[in-house]
Image 1 (cartoon, rainbow, N blue to C red):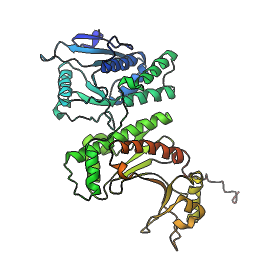
Image 2 (image 1 turned 90 degrees about the vertical axis):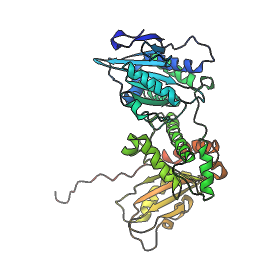
Image 3 (image 1 turned 180 degrees about the horizontal axis):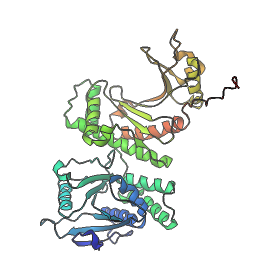
Image 4 (image 1 turned 135 degrees about the vertical axis):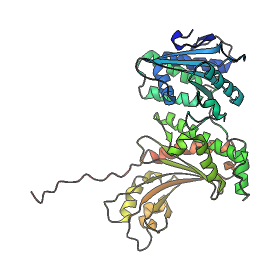
Length: 434
């Protein structure tokens, strides 16, 4: 049972087991137990995840995890969360209830609110939910609960794949050195990546996606308050999170979404801004991905009216040259290997000079095709863009995900990992006055 210093009055609960003694049909219990047992054995893994939501850390931090817990004080209700996490670091302590769902099971508002009440009644700091639903960050939640419920108890959410990704990154970047802990971490990843675990990838947009796509394509008026619109935008944001996790696993480094401070701190504001963007012409949704050490963020935009997916990177050109063509050649030289990859180059100019666009092949042959007549200015920005025409696949709940999941890593492998930002030359010592 849990250390008495946590002062939690439990009636049931057992330490999380790496190999739980439950039937194979109970995938939820097996997954939760395996995860929490790994937290116990590999505290660096647990703390890497839980520090993000305010849990105490430190070299002396001790992580304890129980499954199938129940409390003496449960207000007469038969409530049994899937797990309990307790951390002590010096004089600081922190506890959280865990509720998980596996496969296609969705989190329910009533159950979450009951656990928030249970946590409050027993002095537990937080409730953590885990499912195959995705959110932009742990403080956002796929289910809207009454705000009064989270005044004294914090509510957080993780997707199973986000936890798998974290385990992969920790191991890849040598965050765990003990060989036995590395073995356990790898086994956890192996288990969760197997279909039998119930952990699944993001595979389709919500039901509102197809309706909104059809309305926009037919020129119908989009209602900001419609549930279909909210579902479409919500599934877009889930897809973005899934893409960032997938990219993180592919490059073994953390890939993150770029959000303004306002959007990062407020889930409702984040959703509202995308709803506003999609509801009015030109009916587009866009996002930026930050990849460590890449020359710039990668921008992905879904154009609903044209049914196209745009993926791009924009770089500031050299400023120590006198001709625009030199700037353009600096950029396109880095893209010579892409002659068979369908990309275009955009040049953004100062003042009111309009943006110019041309296929990469044409610019490689003659950089002047991007330079307006009689213009002597240098471009402000140069951008490489891949436009994928999805046609009817844009409307498909599954096909849009399939094409997007394929397109982003392909663009990065072809473009993102090949180009470098311009760096000014270091100044030279003036010897004329010596």
